[in-house]
Length: 488
Image (cartoon, rainbow, N blue to C red; front, side, top):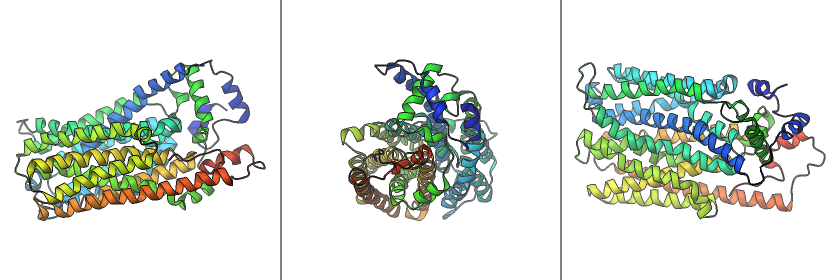
């Protein structure tokens, strides 16, 4: 049976012992590793770039609600009180409920088709919001938007774990998540520019939804042409490059990524506190991220700046977040592990929140938003990368990725209600919740670090006896394999 057939079915191991040996016999000589590095650079330039741009558009489509509020959405649609918070939050229930079905569809239809399809769908839904006339219309659109977006992030994370060895996962996940900050950088100025359109067909905020949704839907079609489900299906890699990548992934025990999910192991991982403690890092970080994406423009607008100025000024914290998440990929090297890297980023979140709570100076508040963005986006790069570096196989990858995104979504849901109209312009409750999130990320990072140290020590002193196990049973051990070491 060919690898392509196996990957399409997603129910059998990707390599039998014989086929694996046969595949490895085609591996070209690469003593310096130059050919392998070039192969991964090709993957960076295609797959990683495509999912990065998709995530930029995802970020802009999420942030356009806040952009539209300062452009008159709330007044034009008759919203008042907490109506806007309800509209902002309502996408998360459908996002969380539809995540599992969307991931099952991704495995059935393949990432190339499914990610392209849902990108087109959420772009069309954003265009539909240009025609919304009241709160009910927006609630319906946002419910469908959450369902459409539910498979985007976990699908992209799954692709990254299947295309890259564990040592490369953290840096690629950081680059993927940096797209959220990149969307914040360009989203504000773009929305400010769109507001200058004088065509009477739409109001300024309606044009924001329509144009940005149209661009997203168009890019979804481009994704169908550029993506591939697995390295063996890549249209860009040469045969020798595929063989080198296959060998490298096998050395990393990542060939299990093509195997079916083991239900027994799924239950074991569901009871593992490490999965939840690491996923809570993203939960905490998303308080700050959603503050920047959805509410930064509103916060700045309430400081006395005009709608267009506040939209354009969102670029400042966006740039800081982009820098923070880009350099976060180097933190584990600089600080020697992910734990101290997370503590470093969380410190900036705490400092920023204290400044926002303590001062009424406009310049200091905007500076604090920049610090908040730098710290929380750094943790967005670190948390998921740390978790996905410790999966060891497809079952833990599927469960860990799902829990990570679910808790991240819950963080976004909570943030939707912490910046309330009645708290303007100080927003003490919202800033206080960001302070809590920064402290929480320190606590869960410490718990994760202690668990990892103990487990790695146990693997050294009292490893599992695998002498009586078959090869399939050894692979199904995933992170419990005695040769596997958790990344600190």
